[in-house]
Length: 173
Image 1: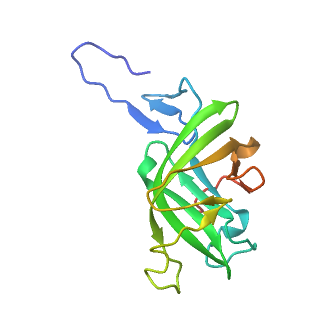
Image 2: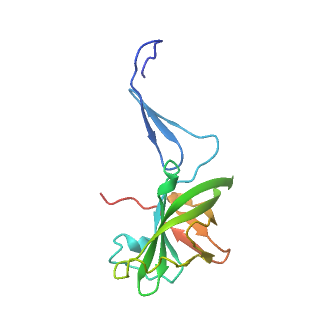
């Protein structure tokens, strides 16, 4: 709806969408799709809407949360289940590669662990916890298999027999 003329200024707004598409807006908006599907979004265990008051139990090594935005790959966050209803936050960098259909390979390189509340700050300095059967070590990339599910959820697997089904998470505010 915006007329573009040579040498004249025009105002358009671009907004990245979680699925890799871009919304281009002038007087009206259009969604532009990428050539290849992209993976991006925030997925969290359904029982963890309020992390300090979980509604579901988990096992050590379960993947509880994945926050990955392709536009900001260096700010990817994982939560890994620990004993005693605690979880470890892992910050790192990620990249997703489309392998066909709704399937992707997600390569995650951990950069920093954040100890859960009640733990000494350096409790995980030398740790290498597992997530879905894959060891998580600072600076070493690990690859997960991911598949988008109907409704926006994500199935993510470390080993073939260790997977998590995470619904898309939307901030409550």
